[in-house]
Length: 391
Image (cartoon, rainbow, N blue to C red; front, side, top):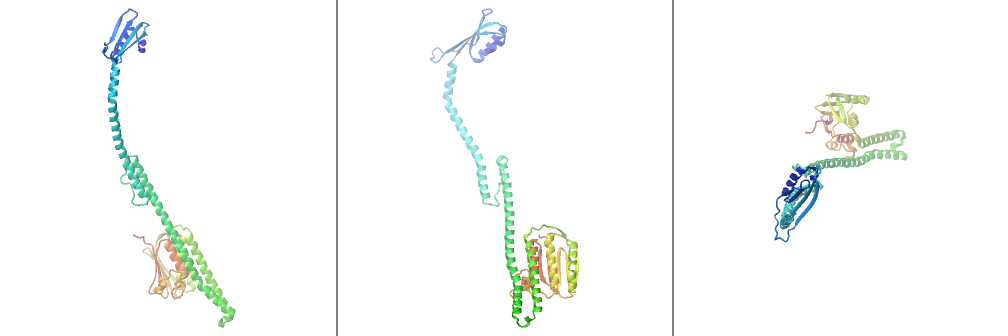
């Protein structure tokens, strides 16, 4: 009604008529300017016999936009309101019951839809906790839960790869510790024989027993045995150092480095009247240069040491295979079986007669994962390294 003050006298009657019709009320308008009385809206349907009926009358003085005064009287009944309230309270319990039932049904359906993937996730993650390598979320959903399943799959894959890597490193450490124990045990046996021999020499010399009265002669032998043990200790320490170090692999062009390494042994070859024949094809491997040079030096030194005088040592690199063959009396099957060990043979000889050299070669090639074998030929012994990749 306050909006009537924003219109003029003529428009006020039309606006009030529309309002009374929409609200179902009766309005009486008296214009002060000419004393005209207007009834707007419809007659109220009043039930005179109802004790629940009441009439509300509101009087207001309204000033229009053009300054005219109007007396406004609005009449309405509470009967319709009470009837609407009565109907509302009659059907309200049913409406509430239907609403609650519908809410429970939809809540149950939603809970089942939500709990099913969560239960599945719980089962799969439980298997993952048990490190079941086949535990995975298959066909992840397209929603947020599916994204979480894919992330858990990726995390589990990374976890398994880390576990595998740690397991591999652990096995290598166990193998390294075992190798150290075997090495120390074997080295003690290797040193035992020259030490025992040296003690016998010195004891006989001190007692002037038989031929050992010639002290000058046997002092030289004692010095030679000490030198022999010194060389052996140096070899043992060098091998131990190589086993401890982390060696970096690089590309090694064998056709270039082998002839260069071989030239360093020319004086030793000449002393024994040996000839070194080379048949080396271009070939490159990936290995630790330090470890592989140590391997080759030991092999060539071993070949020179055990070759017959004025013999021919053959080095051949062909078809991804490197061999070094030296002329000598071939070893027996038993000696070949113990060639890579420092432990004494059943006959009491040390290391199969090969000292630390072949043991060092075997350990380093195993570490570099290079296949190798030591075998007898018609003319002597041959050591072969195979660089072919495994299928």
